[in-house]
Length: 80
Image (cartoon, rainbow, N blue to C red):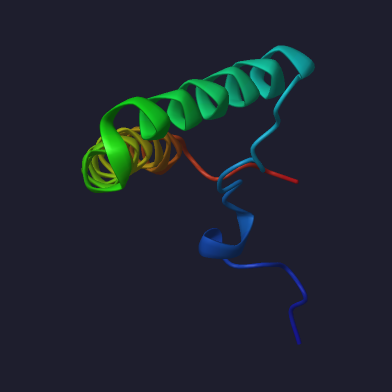
């Protein structure tokens, strides 16, 4: 009986996301700007702005994940 993992099990996969303090400050700043926008343009305009921002964020996140998955797929399986 062989206990050696298969080639699929040897793949590294994606690393978990890591965020720093600067990223947190940027997120808080953007959230504050969003609150100001809600105050200035009203709830309907603010909701449309949030939906637009979420669509752009989902597109960018999907692009980043796709590139990382493609990069790890091109590498041969690791020996460990």
